[in-house]
Amino acid sequence: MKLLSSKKDTLVFEFTTKEKELFLAAISFYPLLNPDYHRLSKTVDEKNAAEQQLLRDAMEEQRRDHKKQLEEFIDSIDWEGENGKKFQISLSTERIDWLLRVLNDVRVGAWDIVGRPNHEQRDKINLQSKNSHYYGVMELSGFFQTAFLHALERAS
Image (cartoon, rainbow, N blue to C red; front, side, top):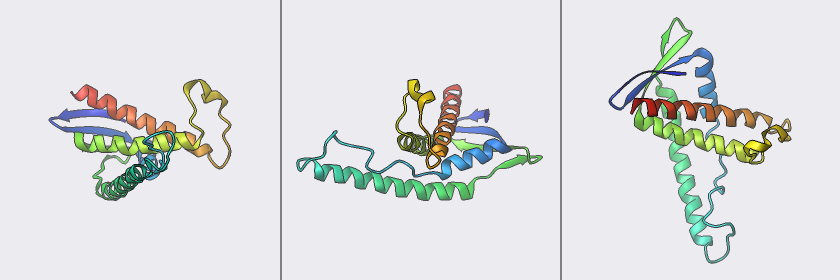
């Protein structure tokens, strides 16, 4: 995936066939982050239970909205192909910001599922067949986040 051009608030990216498939696969995992992941405090007691429920409800509403937008986005992508091997897509900076939030949900959700490893523990992760693919999803989402962030930095 590479940035081909940027004009005003629109960036044009080129994807190989495999990158296109991997990008669509990564965002297809949305939503992955447990809605209870976001906490007002480490412990929930009677004093903050109502506020915690409000946060959970707001996160659920945001997830539903993002899921609907994601379905519309996938259906509306205009992949401009070149011999069927390379594809171009034009994205507004606003759309990229939204995609970064979607990818972050997938990345953090996958990270949570594989046991929240830190950089020092990556070679010591005890993956099991039921969760091993989430490690790949975590890395894949991180790759696309990094690529989009780097493109936004270059474009500004």
